[in-house]
Image (tube, rainbow over all chains, first blue to last red; front, side, top):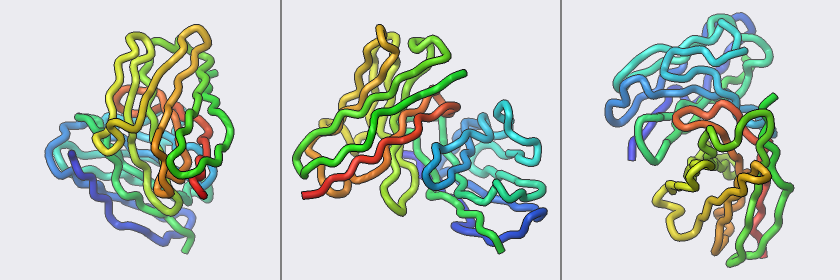
Length: 107
Length: 116
């Protein structure tokens, strides 16, 4: 199975801050990576697919980059609704696997 | 609009089985895979398996092989996930999600509690 490792596990930030989350795959996954935003009691929401493609309806402050084994999710200016847990997920092989999550908390 | 609506919360005893449903609307059910993902309390997201609603083909994570069965009823655009031999560690929120590689629509989640 492909292991996905996110860092940091948590980050404290303020509204307006730029936040970067990284995701590393245990083997190359080309650009088959997705990012999700998840709040307690809600369904996860797809933000980015194919490493850098913005899902329809997602604000442009979210961006993704990377290929191979190293990927990044950037939130350019954190908004109150962005405080949540973020997960990466590899989409190149079965089983699909998620990172352990990065919790973005209010500073 | 696309919606996936799941069945309600369940409480089961250890050793029992649970069957969760996921009713799709707003799109042609047979044209997108359905995946099942769970989240135990305080844990991350865990992919369980997928099903092609058109063919009925399935693929399961090895961890759940032999305990999970994913089926569908195309006449009512509904997918099902049945998990057997439940244990306390299976207490989690179970989600269905549409897509083959990335998952663009998710159900609201179904809490399954396993307790004696």
